[in-house]
Image 1 (cartoon, rainbow, N blue to C red):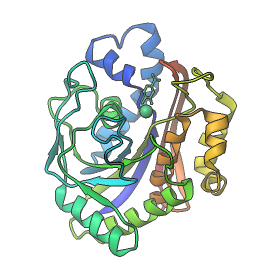
Image 2 (cartoon, rainbow, N blue to C red; image 1 turned 180 degrees about the vertical axis):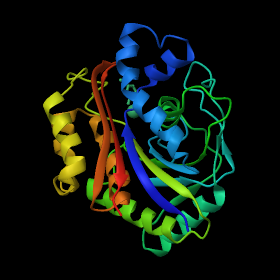
Image 3 (tube, rainbow, N blue to C red; image 1 turned 90 degrees about the vertical axis):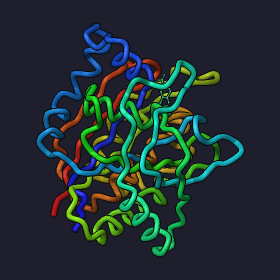
Length: 280
Ligand code: DHB
Ligand code: FE
């Protein structure tokens, strides 16, 4: 049987991707950001997941005001990196486990959780930067990747509790897939940041640290957190953090925190990263 063994969360700042792609990782500014991922790179090389479900948001690369799915699962065989204005990132094409993706779609929908199935999309920094952070610069990504895109760009995004319950439904779906697979689930985006308007540049370190603490120990508080609290405390793009609750919901009530990294600044964003192991 397939099983979700671990989850992690990370910010997906596009400038980190540019630093990696352009050989700037040894600059002191980026070293401080990237050093916090070395533990995870070594850990994941040992864990060797067969599949990673990457919960991410598209930033108007594949979806725009013509079509805004709340939850979209990538069901094609492959996904190429998006051109976000400077050409596609020089990173490998994402290879999906399409059988698992279709199974998750079917299981969630029959579990009364309506998913949108998508094929012809490219994947932007929301998905490719986390892959670079965990796997560096390989010729091919070392595992299959199921993209799961969440709308957090246009109001209304899903509630944190809805995200949590989708995570639970995904865990049920994975557990009913007959192939023997080591599956991880990643939540991406966040932490506090605001890219626009009068409060552009907002960072809230105490709030972010409480979010990290409670992700491990008191996720019930996070499930109940309203959109307006994300907006007030974590800035307009801080709402990306609801995606972390899909990951956390999929791991079940008991987790062990294996690693944590928090660093300000990276571009406009407070970079947060946490690795959680599922408790049996
Ligand atoms: C930045 C962060 C993001 O999450 C994003 O999608 C775009 C830009 C930033 O910090 O610059
Ligand atoms: Fe983003």
